[in-house]
Figure 1 (cartoon, rainbow, N blue to C red):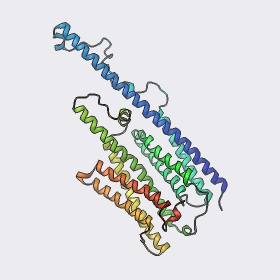
Figure 2 (figure 1 turned 60 degrees about the vertical axis):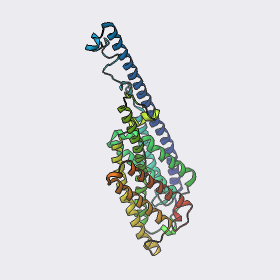
Figure 3 (figure 1 turned 90 degrees about the horizontal axis):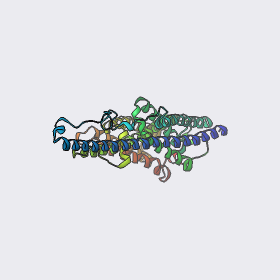
Length: 361
């Protein structure tokens, strides 16, 4: 028996969740934009101070016949107007004691995630079953897991909060697609899914695997961008450019993120767990297929694409352990695996007919 009132509460909770995620995304974006502006101003101020210092040195050398140049140019009386202890990074530090945009966005994200989980739980209570029997429920549940994982990582390592824009953005996109194209009324399980404990185990592990693939793809993508940014900055510095600019304001955004080495290590840990989950997704799916259809493997499109995902992530882990094929090349394989995940979830579920067609709309 479907509790329609709880189902409506679930839908309302998820709609409000989307609104809060939009506000959080704006907050994270504002934090990155303000930081970019402060860093840009800091670099311009540093360049101006250096030009003034060189002008003072030239004037001192010209007036004293080189004597001042031998002993060093005189500094301003305040000791900090040109070379003061504040340094070039001083404008990058907020001067107000209020809540920063990043902290406000993070708190909004926490509230939105709590409401997100509430929407998933009330959907489960309304239907008296697990909340992942169709694409809509799978999307809402898996994105809730993504946000919970992001919050856990961000609490342990505060610098990862700078990834908020790049995590909340994809989650918000998936929720909008779910609410626009995939939403279906709360209903009982189809007969083919009833009376089987494997829907709890097989689909539950698949949700964790998909969620980790989403989060891992975000980290791997930012790793590639950060690695490129670091190479350009290193080359520019070696060429004598003290304040090299790369990618304009987005380059300042990348300055806020952890190094490519840190991101690569985090991506590897996430994908390692995801690979284990994809492995058990295949194993549990085969056992369930034996019970439901009388065979472990039947080359169903869903089975084939899940195996393809497993192979790509296995190649990623192998590449990461290979000396000449790690770091950025391995990250490319991780992103290829995510593309296969997206194809499996969208095209295979909605376009290609198979025994798993009930998992679609």
